[in-house]
Length: 594
Image (cartoon, rainbow, N blue to C red; front, side):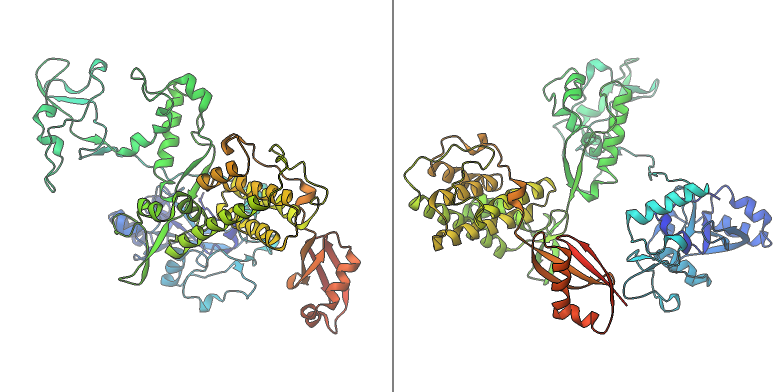
């Protein structure tokens, strides 16, 4: 029986097979079952249950043992075949492999009917005892009880290894499945695209002629809550003549789901004033696909799926020349805020009344501060809590940048500043290779790489660190004026996308005539960006037992000697024999002891 699973890596943990009551094989299994009457009665009863009840989390898990057995291809063991109400006919193949140790629905079903539970994932803390489990455990740690897959860490590697094995054995294949269903696009509300159809008693449903398109929403509507679709009360809109026979007819009052509009709006940006066609194929060919799409994860199975589907339809119609509308997708996390009344941290939203006014923040702290804090608040893909103290911290940082630039300008030499370019050439001999010079190159590298990865919070953190280093060098007088001015200008160039107003102002004050917008992004020297010292991780039999601060490029003998001398490491190797050392320069040394 073909089954679909998103976790083939848990195949060794499958202890039963479950089919939807609507599965085509259900009648056949009922006929072959030693309990044919019982199975048939259950199938009939389960099909009458509402879909909502069957899909509900925590709902009653029910089923019947068919008395038929299947063979688990990974373990070679026979497992019972059940028909269960929580298995849906349109999910995958309508049949699932039950892995109760690592799936909550399977766990509840197994506990209800006394089915075996076999864990196949464990953590470093130990294995999971099925007898002591009160709920399914997540797929964490690494595989065990899984034959040749043992030791494989949780994640894409485990899934890929399982698929490779399954395909090599000829018992299945890797496949991408979509939970697509019919899309009901009609809505009984005013705000939406009118459906261009007219209902005639003689002719039936008649499309609005092309010459009469687009159908515009009327303005003589009265919005009264709880009284249905306001379009139905607009006689100007509803009462029309049939375009086919001329008889009195009625315009369709349902409007399209606004998801229909958002499924192709990105294409309309290319020719927004063209009233003769929806898409300009030439412009679409030149500009599509969208390079980067940023949106909430809640759109992944709605708007984004619809947009991909519509793009394929438009390709079939010859309006675009590609199937995929978006090149890259980034899902940002939610912003939360503490509710003083309840003491709870809640999602920030207009409906909750806990939003922050950008206008008020800008009036108090400036636009640059708001931009810096918004990017610094945390990993953009994670949930982050809004904090007024954080805004003040960003404000203080920009003040420190201002004070730094003021100090650099005060001590700068009278000689003209060298012309700015994309590289950091023109360094004075004294500055070349100084700690500040090296940090400058490392900061360029970090900010550039972090920005490319959308890690804006760590990019801002690197700029804060760089600002502190320049300020300390200025206060100590440890660098010549030209080196300080060069470093300050690099700071301004890197900070400019985040805080354009302050940086543009100081860029000009420090002697530059061209706008920062017209200045090339700085480039780092890979050799200069290397830190002179690195943190070397020390492992004993594969587990981290210490960390060492060593010079970059230290040899294996030196690293081994330092590891032996470390007090934390000594506690794990004392009285034991170091059989060999595995050394990865500048990264780690693993001591294999016995």
